[in-house]
Image 1 (tube, rainbow over the protein chains, first blue to last red):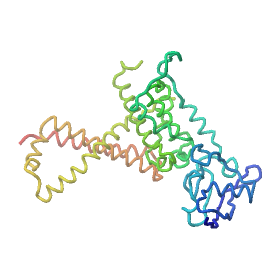
Image 2: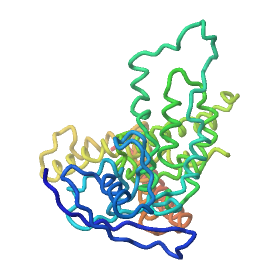
Image 3: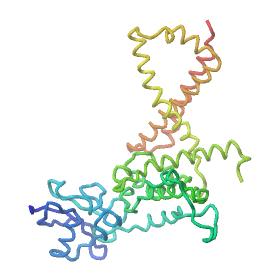
Image 4: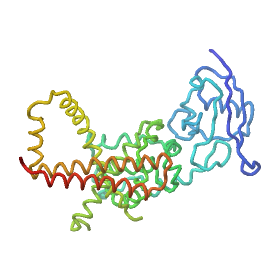
Length: 247
Length: 116
């Protein structure tokens, strides 16, 4: 098994004792197949137990280990050390306040996600005895891609609009709202539109496409947002040209 | 939260973008062909001029010109913003005014275009 030494430059910040965040260098003897998360775990276990970061599954499912690696939002568990020739700079996700070291405060995202009601709001309630809600493969296909989101927030760290306008609902929340709107069993679109069709909803998006470039699960949030824009535009024109349709 | 009125400007932008994506390459090709003297008789100047003099075609041309100009104007507005020019109201007023002026100019020209 081939081994080599890599240099990591990790952002350290403890708001209780540090005035400013600073970088700390670590040398790690690593194996060829190690990802950045392996190196961080190695540091924490053998060199510096005070280093803080989030992780759980180590297999790109939980969405906990999002961080900036050489300036790009990445999952630390999916980013191989061998792909980086020089010193690897590791920072907390951009656009979020730092809680400590690589741990960010994610309250803003969680609050936005809650606001778009990312759960099934049944079109018609029916008793369990009436059986399951059936769906054709074509109906499933309309939203399946958007179910793959793991809430890792890489898209928020990549989105320049979210960086400028913190009130923007952002890629993942809107994509997940779209996921339920596209579901044939769901009837909650009108409720979600109150958040999504607002100025700070989908309309702050300028379609730079950065969200889709960094998405580790290939959800393609940019596509979801464009679809939401088209549907919201149709809504707007119908509401303003055919007022008798308004309930 | 109140519904945004952004669809007023975004609707024609999206329509114009889709339209120009299909139309612009065709126009470039036809212009090159005509310039090189290879345009078929159906697309020769006299034929196109007679075609454009018809009322419904005039209307169609104005719509196509408006959507194309509006799409370009909106794209320019967003590009300015992304490049750091954040005086959005000023930029928007300016670029949309140019698109409307271009549309009005085209409409005025088409109105004066009579069948030969």
